[in-house]
Image 1 (spheres, rainbow, N blue to C red):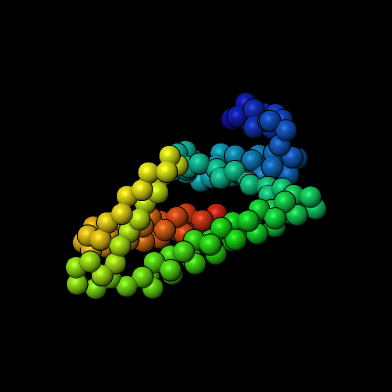
Image 2: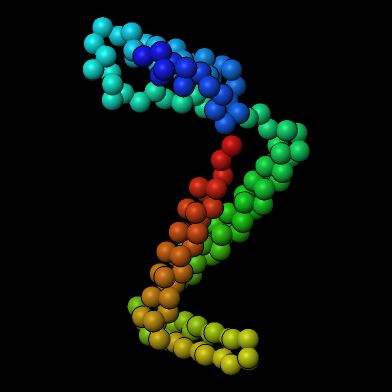
Length: 138
């Protein structure tokens, strides 16, 4: 039993004295418990020390959050523009034009196809907004 305690007391990976002492106390509690067989399989939770952010790290975090918030704002604005886009059941009431980098142009007035493209874009923007919102944390 003493061997277990001395192994726990050895410095490990630069942990603080407080963490080492907590591990020793937890090990002693398991060893000195009335029924050590019951606690044999228990895992002693590691103490997580949260590192204090420096002023520069805080500034960078705020700047990055600002960029993420700006990106979210643009995505929400574009998504709302798609919501305002009206497609009625009448054929040929709207048209869609696609231009590529080579100057090629594709134009269509096929309403069901345009509706599917808009639905796809809405779903894509919703997914992008959700991903960006996950990045907004402190």
